[in-house]
Length: 396
Image 1 (tube, one colour):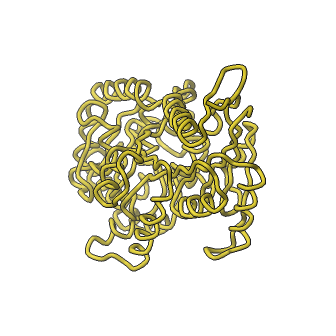
Image 2 (cartoon, one colour; image 1 turned 90 degrees about the vertical axis):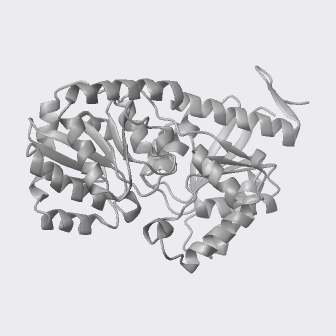
Image 3 (cartoon, one colour; image 1 turned 180 degrees about the horizontal axis):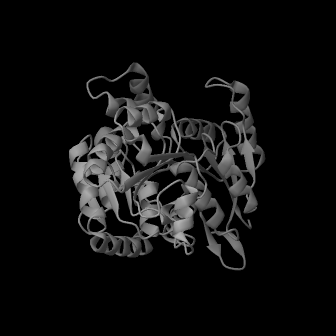
């Protein structure tokens, strides 16, 4: 057996943390040992082109809905026909299907990834738990037992799953997301880049990157921004991303009288370039598994102000690589922003330490190495094989 066939199963390939983590994994995977294919439940997304350009095929199932049995059968046929040895799934719907269909198709190794254990409905509406959320919890908890391993993106997610489920802790392994450090140290004329975004060249730029939905807490950043702009009129805010809350957030900026200091870029694929224009990155989320935007900012040498939620404190060292503040607290957020934009020397020092921390603990090379180690352990355990350089996989 020359290479082990792997299907990476994900809900879609739109731009997001899980999609980026999958792309980085399949692109960097040792192709002498593994033969990866990416399968998405829905149609193709913008990340598909990046994956295919690296020589990894993408197979969309084009599911028309949750109960598209024809698409489920296409997945079963793909697993059976291609003699898949490992299914590695990402995100809720792909995890459910990967676990169930993988077992029916007798795939030897089933791995699923858990990036978050608190649903956005629960975070936003603390006093209510909708039936849909309960059903998701139930389905996820029951099907999780079909996984040989569950990869969590942070220790916080792992510990929460252990407390909330009866799954054997030995089957839960934390592999932090990694970022490709190349390309985040952008040279060139920052002045021109600022002008291109409609920013004043002298402005202190505070940036935010991510989906514009309620769980990302951008509303609280805008309320903090009003306080920041009142005290430091040269501050400007660069909001990168799109989502269901964009129109409401733009309206909020107008009602707060700060829209003239706000730039909403929409979805962008030039994040390193945008980061180069920022003095500080802010992540005001209500919950995070492990924030990709923070890793990218630290890779770019930028200090981070983030809410003390989820796995974020595993990345951001308070008062070392940035500042941590409580969620839903515009006052604390504003104070932290003002503290860093008024002390550029401190902010730059934090950014340098953050870059070093990412290099040591959160590189894409480290993420891939830990993922391949997991694969090798499971292949030996479940398939009784080990890899011999120059000869491929051999029976033990």
